[in-house]
Image: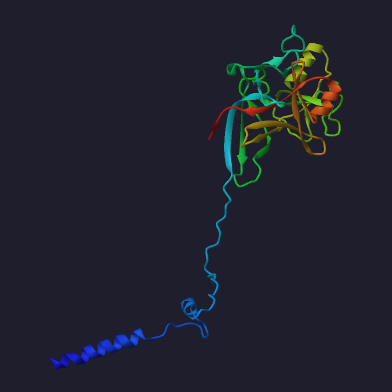
Length: 274
């Protein structure tokens, strides 16, 4: 059996030689294990060049349609004021529908004005507000003729055009056709049509706008605005006075020129329809 010792000896020697091969390292480099054994400070971690790059957090824009009623809240204390009613407010109690503007509110949601709008929202944006929206009506008194909830500027007796520099001037919420924002379009609308019928004159050829709404996807608030002649869009505040919804650039200055009124804001009350 002596001949078996040669290969066994060779294999054992080979294993010993293999085990004694030094680990390859850069000249002068000492591993952290050896540094620790020698009492030397450890080398700092080395960032690999193949480290993963951070992923982009951008998300694709989302387009959705909202169908809802306009719930009004008192801006002073955030209390519920009522749903905007699908009926025009009267100039006097004996003349229902005389103005052609919205200013009546109800606690009955079945009598509320129904609206819908489509918006595109970027979830990666820091802003939750989407502007320049048209709001369609679904059950308005002037539904078959107009189709949108917009703003009419009653220049004939409103003191002048709506502007940031003349905040005492105001507009009305009313039914309007599809109308561009800048320049404003002088076109028939529920306010001017009904006022002219009542007055038997053509005094109220009001400028109107339909792209007047911004929507906050976080709070559900719908807020009006107006685009002035030079193309700047100014936010408007909503207030109720004498059965009319007035919209103006600055509530405090309007209050000083026009007596007492209640400042409101609107929220959309129902869920998205994808």
